[in-house]
Image (cartoon, rainbow, N blue to C red):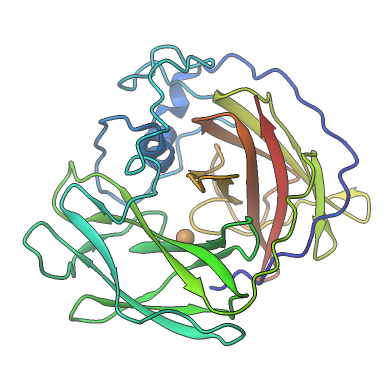
Length: 323
Ligand SMILES: [Cu+2]
C-alpha cells in the first residue's frame, strides 16, 4: 500500500492543547506492549517485547497504564530517562543489535517510481528471511525527505533469499531517509527494530518550509483535528475525523487499528510510530480516535495520520509543536 504524496495541509485553524488525562488504566497495558514499542526504541529504553502479532484488543480508549513498563514509572512527562540523542535508539542508525539495513540499489532517480531493493542482515551476516508479523505485516517501510515532505508508508515484498522490494512512488530531488521497522522472528523476546539509511535523489532540491504547528488539517475531503499537550514525554492524543463538517463513523480497520500514526522530528528525523488505543470491530471507526504517544524530544513533529474508508487509504499531515 502506497501513501500518495501528502498535500500541503490546510492552513491550521486551531491549536488546542489539552491536558492529558491520568494515564492510569490497567486494561490498556497490553495495548501498550503491542503498540508503543517503536516509540520506546526512540526513547532508547532497553525493553524487549514478545514478537507475537499485534493484539490491539485490550485497550480502553484514551487510557494507558505505563507504570508497569520498565523505565516508565512516571508516565506523565518525566523525561529523565529519555535518550533521544542515541541515533540508533531514534531509528537513525543503519545498524543495531547486529542487524543492518543494506540497500541493494544505488538509489532512486528523481521523478520516477522505483522498485527499491534492500536486505536486513542478521548477526551472522546473512540476510534475514524470518520476520515476525507485527501490526499485520512483516516489515513496515517509511520514506521521508529531510524537509518532512513526501511521506511514504509501504509494505514491501520479501523474496525467499531475504531481498525486500519496496514499490516507492517517485521521489523529488533531495536527501531522503528510508526506515525499515521489523521484528526478527527469533523468539518470544525478540525486540522490534527501526533501522534507516539516507539516500540522495539527484537534481535540484527545492525545500518546502514546514507548515506552522496547528491542530487541524484536511486531505481527501477529511478534516482531522488533533489535540495534544505539547510537552515532551507521554501524551494522550485525540483526533477527530470529520467530512463536510460532519463527524465520520465509517473508518475501516487498517493494520489492526482504525488509524495509523507516524511522526518525524524536524531536524534530525527521529521517528515516532504510534497506534490508537481501543478495539477494532467492523467498519465503524471514528469519529474520535485516541492514541497513546511518547514524544521523546521537544521541537516540531510532522505527524501523519492514516486511515481507511471504502477501501481507500487517506493520509492527513499536520505539524505538532512539542515543548
Ligand atoms: Cu506499515
